[in-house]
Length: 427
Image (cartoon, rainbow, N blue to C red; front, side):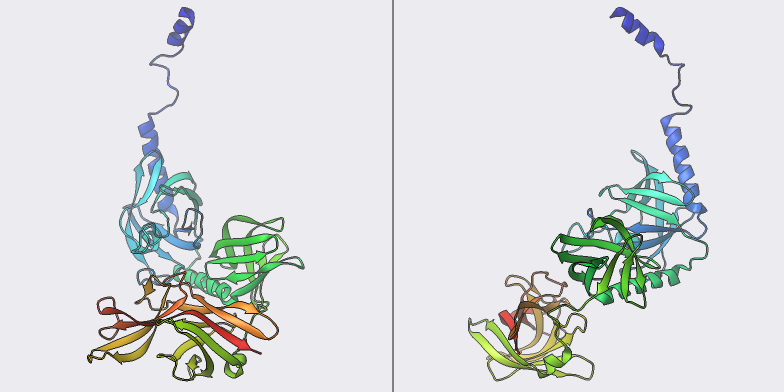
């Protein structure tokens, strides 16, 4: 034991150096090197941001230009972030600092970055992204960044000198809109249909006999790109190219495609206008109603839904027809005024709710129809959330406000509501 200890004591000494420099100096040198690399990109960088610990929201491209004095200029392909549109520029501050590793921190607020990480009034986690990133790899053409809090690894690559930021961001958003316009889709592997589903400007989801295929994506110049490859019928697919002529998305490197396909329960506009419809619901007094309904087409392309008779206090609503899904949507809208027995006047808005909560002031929040049952003689539609406001909403609330327009400051309470709603087409 003594011999071993002696050997341990004599095998290393204060004069023996494993590294040529101290760890502090190495870190400082690394920070200087990374700073030089960040600044060296003449046309800046593109950060491929996928918010969420599971990348469940969407992908978005954020363009960044760093200068040597700590200023960063940013824009992105996602519109109306804090009022800023695609390609609008916003300047803020950044720092490269020492932590457990070199850390790129966006130290002052920038909407194109912090909008994905800051909490909202309804969700303390927001979109679950980061504004501070550990630099794990770096070169003159690409950085690998790992979110300090969420631990999601992101890619940032140098933009080509020819890229016009605003034009490029607008093109990426236009591609996102083209994908969203497909709406109802089918997924094919070769000639084999894997299932049906929906696509938005942020993600797609298809259900079939073999399970669910889903992924969020960011828009590229030629189509869409996933955070990581997904397995589609034995094919690892990470990118699709948009075919303008066929209006479909074709996988890169695999015989897989996403195509527009009308669902089996599609209802054309003429059927709404000429069909035999019945609206059923339960009103706030517990009374069940089954009322014939007529649809009329308005000059602006919307539809007027009119329940015949006098059973309903609010028989007339405005809705919009979706020519891709064949369904109709009702969003928050002004209904007019009512007067109490004491003579007090209230302004009424149609709002969505779930029986406990009401999205009383959320413009755009509403209900959309979806097929509940379908056979040779009837098609029954139910009412579900349109994805805005409350995601589990199934009620129509007629919400009273003490003034016009209706706001949270003059909100008074519900005047009437309809629940257990269905819309039945008799063929």
